[in-house]
Length: 360
Image (cartoon, rainbow, N blue to C red; front, side, top):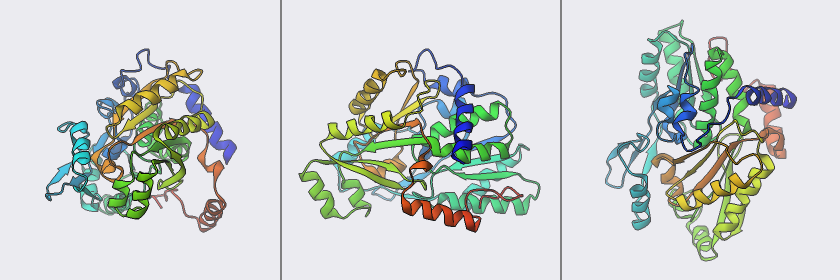
């Protein structure tokens, strides 16, 4: 399996277009992949697309929603009507103010899928990991409802199993593969494997937002703040957040991210990287500067964007992340993960669709 996965990823690297001459032109990342294709690709707004990338890719985006402290619901329109600095600065100035998020309903997904089905093309939806949201299960329910109403509909639902801009990098490559002529089923199979080759590492400015959301005890957040402890985090094979280490000070946490990049990078400058933050542009600049000092990365395309309110509400201002294509994350399983993977395999579980295109 590992050898097959490596071969699939190598084919991606060998066929990928040359890096853009102007890495700052992130719209070009989407524009050069957006060609005529025979599948409808749908994503969601939590992949933190840089301005213009989703439009240039030609994918449909399902927006998530969030609710402010006054109970007003807002649509995540990928910062088209709101400034990310103002949003996160408000969180800094008013730490007592909290935003809440909710999963997309099966009914809303059904509306999107039915409208997409009218185009007469097979559909593939790639959504936020089940490790962070139940929305992907709503999408699966909606896909099944669509099949019941329209037995001939071909639809696939894929859990990204990677978060934030990792979903953006996956979408970019899926669109390119579709432009190369892959069918919806072939895309689903390709993405089901490729998602494990995307790495993401990030650090937080404080534990306050995690404590407010109940993800860590308030006492732990208080101690961490007093000791200037900065975590380095990533996500596991299910897309759930996982702690990689604790660092004394912000700079050490950033250097830990760079070290993980060196240890896991695919060393292919034709594949774009992504740097995202919750209003931490100086640290994002530092990460980009350090990346470009690495051999072969001088001209690599780096897509820069701001984390959406959906994820930002849970991590708070000051988060910065580096996302890139690298080694197979499945090869570094813990003992528990290996046992769980073997049990799932014996039970026939996983993300393999049935003959009707269902996501198990």
